[in-house]
Image (cartoon, rainbow, N blue to C red; front, side, top):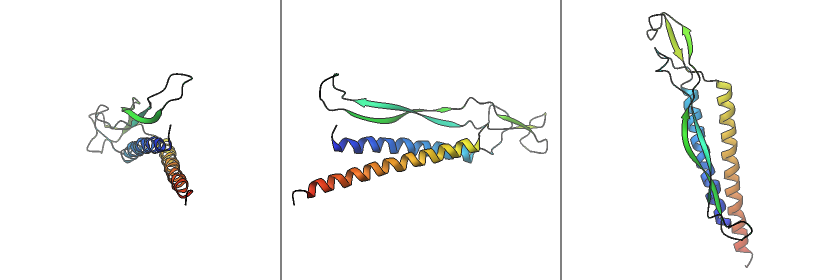
Length: 141
């Protein structure tokens, strides 16, 4: 693996964490939304990450290998919605219930902080790699 592969690895990680931040923000934004039936209720979305390994050499041999991460998909939560008795709500069903998504704001905020810090760490990796490459080029001067 060369130094330039580090940019691909940290870039793929930043892209994945960006998707994680966007889905978490969407979950937080829709946490207070209600619907008239449990089938219409917003369902929390979470990305599924997948390690990507390309060009792996045979065991015991030196070769070029690159790695990274990709988003295999985005899955919806299977948690049951929360039924709230609000007969005055215009979205209430015939029994007077509205349905809210089962989203825990504290968990989502912790997920957002974790994704933000992972993104920041990968930015620092790319910045340090750029700095090291620049310093290497100036050694001959």
